[in-house]
Image (cartoon, rainbow, N blue to C red; front, side, top):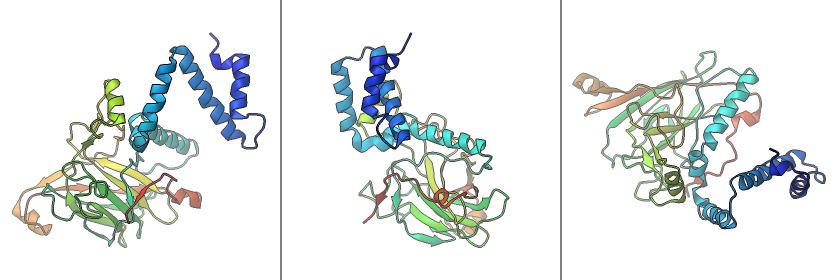
Length: 305
């Protein structure tokens, strides 16, 4: 059966909406025509009523501040990762550390540490975490001077800046790797979190029979001159939601083992006075083909005052 968008009168109408014959940016016009046509087909196929249409539009408008969560929850961020992976393979670009979604809770301008240091301010008495690793290129050579930008939630699943009870940049730091490309940090084990209770995205997911929860995880941007910027995160091994993440961020290679230490000698050697968890994780960066490859996407991000 012919789709409604392919009938001559509708094709002409969509052509006028997208100005297919009258604008220089043909790609933009074609994208708009495709989106509008698909929406027309959906409305026609499912006999969407006028009341349903305006309810949906009003719902989306009210949910605008949550669009970062919507992009994750409906799988758009994950699809972009998969699509970029496919394009890289088609272009013959070597594989580095798997990319995965950024999420909406990054804050620019975190303090810079040389080699490593502590992320948390000590007020949240969670399980102590020591994490370390190396940044390398696809030939296995260390990348000195790379910036490992790391951020994660506290034991309640809340992020500093957005949670005003936390100190500035709590559990957020940038770390410059040493001459061997190594980094380390001390923090606490993060907790997972859920979409805000009663939010538009939570109610939408519930209507689909889905939850809006994420497993415990730690976010990273890794950048270095001459290399492609990496956006990724690791999941905490053993979290029951690792393979049931509403944001679809879990990927193979991003669930490193967690080793827990309780013997006094190891605790003392780590410079601590209590048991701790340890994660070792190395990042592999691919070479940039242009300066654009080294840059962050144009996504709007928070900037602390």
